[in-house]
Length: 560
Image (tube, one colour):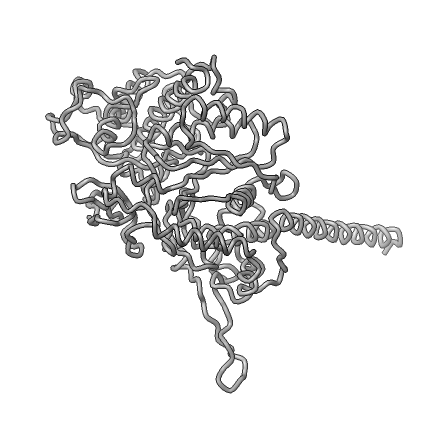
């Protein structure tokens, strides 16, 4: 072989090796800098038991206080549906300092306030420059001062982004851990973590199956679901029927959350049945040796002292699918959050090192929950998001019911006048630029939720029809119909300002398009359903944003 080619080949090999070493060093430095930020000394080969012993004394004291407070939580006995139960739930969400997440934070706060949530709402803000922090503090102080409402709170943290700003989603576990370790008083016994791009229709309450009766769904396409009704027959919760028994309420050792399809994917890590991203994934490098999050933990030595060749699967794929397939909304006791957060914060860079993708922090959350064996009661009804999904893990069944015929005695004048045969338009009928659709208002009135510009023309309580509603609308998709588009990345960052203009809204164009779709034989029933759901999101997100703008102007500007 040509000696020059040999020299060139050796040079390339050397350069490749050097780059690999530099990348390894860069990740190691980033990881230990990340750990230093939250002041935990963590060995990369730490065992499950060693991790527990390294949690600080101050955290243990906070846990004791939270556990004591847990027994003093809301026990009003006012029923699962009563919004007053939300006063014991502290809502938190994590953002950076960008204008993009700033308007989302304001919208989220006003939506929970309008929904009737009574507990505190804390925005955790990570990585601000001094000028950004001052600007946010000033604006939020105006909201608090002029509304005479101190529900809204702020907590600023350093940036916990991995690789500089490469992976900013690690701010969520890092920011929450910083908040809970530096929060001197937490009076609420339950904390609910939501995303900033969630807008609320219902208050967040700790009750789950308490006082409720499960009823199997008999509708085609939804027979794998079960609804939970209170003593008055009102439907409050929706979930898949194969899941473990629904606990009474969120308390120490009992958590709840939105059912996501990610839970069990990592539980098969390192096996031939694992998906591509997890075939080489090493759970031990994340959770530590002997952790309950593992799927192949060696058993203790035999009675004669010899090593056992058998292994125990603590977290099987089935166990993970039924208990850890969770995403925002996350709801747990304050005491459990104090146990969970140091793990989640520590596990996130470890997961990201092997799985450098968007959902790394979500997988880290589920692994942290499995590590402490904190199972989650999964529900479909905390949110709707993707109109195109046919999975029953989202609460779309309740929205699809809008298209069902109702007895004429409970139909309002507006709906009574719609063209015969048109039902898809029900998701928009009666909406205006700052008021929700008629059917939605009837549902909210029936359940006693919030202040949504209800009408005196509604039927009496006995006659009101309609089912339940999801707790939040998660607007992480793009929604387009009849020349209307709602996409969070296209929203003006200065939407909330004293001279701000409301979003444009033409309900007549939307209902006309839905009528056309319904009467078009070229659309399948599934396609019609997807378009109706898109209409639902548009006819709720736009009015809710405009209502939040009205509230903002009243608080900050003293005007509509």
